[in-house]
Amino acid sequence: GQNIDQPTEMTATEGAIVQINCTYQTSGFNGLFWYQQHAGEAPTFLSYNVLDGLEEKGRFSSFLSRSKGYSYLLLKELQMKDSASYLCAVEDSNYQLIWGAGTKLIIKP
Amino acid sequence: IAGITQAPTSQILAAGRRMTLRCTQDMRHNAMYWYRQDLGLGLRLIHYSNTAGTTGKGEVPDGYSVSRANTDDFPLTLASAVPSQTSVYFCASSEGPASDEQFFGPGTRLTVL
Image (cartoon, rainbow over all chains, first blue to last red):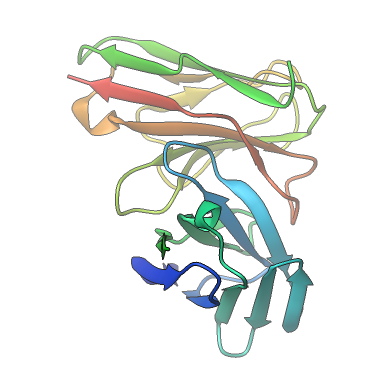
């Protein structure tokens, strides 16, 4: 079967760094996405990785290792507005997204 | 219209009733999707359309139908609603069906009693 695993909840302090991990087992792989979803709102796109390595975009970076079926999202200089759920999704061989349940990130002052 | 819109925002529905959730995008995207999001579960794909005139089944299509008569609109119909269809429904679109960022509508919160 297809499976995406990420921690249910994490807590971090404003100004700090946090790493949210995602492991996956899917039928095929055509890329991995990270989305941010604030409570009561729609998901919004953060990053896309298809090759191994680190993609940096401002305070957010995303890493992929295809051989390990592993990705992480790194958030630096945390701000209160970063409190949200972070969704990992893998595009399978049919080009459909398989979604993890999301990691709720709580930022404390 | 800017982006992707959904209607209604929320709805309470009696079991057995028919209901259509509306979705419209103005980005001229080829691909559109319907997801449901339930607490503790990831987004699950109900139906999708890679281009106007075509539709396909996702992971959880039973009890739902869709149509794609034109590029902009992608309605989702519940023929006879059941309580297990209580969920938040998101419509999304992307330029193409593969490896493209998906843009999401604001969601419809549906409660079936």
